Length: 137
Image (cartoon, rainbow, N blue to C red; front, side, top):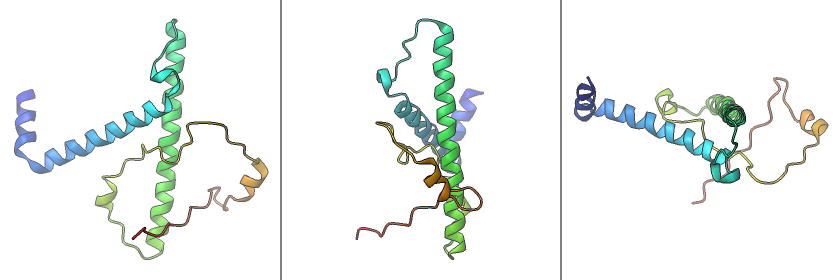
């Protein structure tokens, strides 16, 4: 059975691209997890299994939070682009992974004035999207 899948992958370019896309998304997710677990160089150093499991669950929760946040705001950005008349192909969106970390501050402390930030939310409860930066050409 394994040989059949390998032969299929080698013979069918569409299938190869689909598998490569999934591998890239998986690598993107692993990269996000490595970035989130930067303390102790990414090693789980607890001795007890319960503490190791707790650390793994915390990493999973944090990873899911970043992916959910990014997915939600990707959707808002795409809707805004389409409303503005820009064509965004759904097939292109299949290649995008929400496991990016450019919007995450991994270091330091962020001081947030809660009332000020809440006042910036739109009626649906979202933060405003950043305006698009001009292309540096």
